[in-house]
Length: 350
Image 1: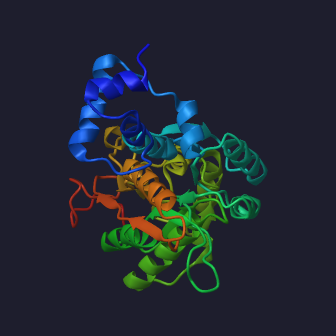
Image 2 (image 1 turned 30 degrees about the horizontal axis):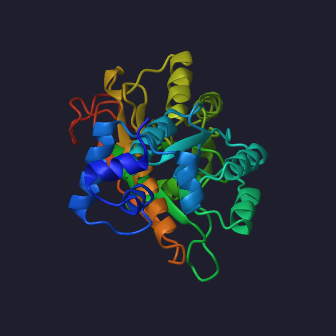
């Protein structure tokens, strides 16, 4: 098995230079670094990760705590985190907190005990114990997708990476209003999540921009999952004056909404229009094709890795919140016959 000394001889450098290339402990000229990497590849040299961690006090690993199994949106984010970490030579340890505050605190501690260099966490709706643990142990952390309240001076306590939520939701509402709808309902997510509150804010802004009053009966909580959204939609449809258009606040709830509409014998968009926050990989295959807000899922994951590595390189810099823009994907479930504005189907507005 080749050693660092073998790599050094092949590259024509010292063993110390090979160590600096492997561990990043000192800048190395680009051509020298490439010579070392070429020698490693030619000889089939595999670095001793344990030995490197002893030298650098780092394991070159990142802990990721997101509900990836239960939420397909986070599955795409995970792919972005994995690609970003691999590109920078980091491995990934993954735990699913199941959006449960108690379990969340446990899995983050387990990741920390495995000496990850830093963490990327999508916090639950009640992350007080999680944040207390991360702060008490000074764990380099990026909060992903869901932001937490800022400190008293307005600065975030942790680095945060998320997408815009309010303005894109407002856009869905004004789009439906432009098609003639007056009773537009929102199937909101789990109370306590920043994404839920921001999308409700966007919904209200959209109503105000269209000149409509806010009616609290038209905002129901689907708890960010399909079954809850199915129940919430049934409650909306039981109103004396039910909505003619719906906005769903995440992809899982869109499935529940579609089930409820099917069970009530309603057709989208002929009987009721539908717009979704979160795009599906298969949204274009639905009949009708789903008009949606697409979040930059993989880009969010890669950006979270970049921000975390910047934190590791500069531990004392101020924390910041990075927001990435979303994209309006215009299809036909909103009632536009060809996915173009100003071309509504019959019977969608009232």
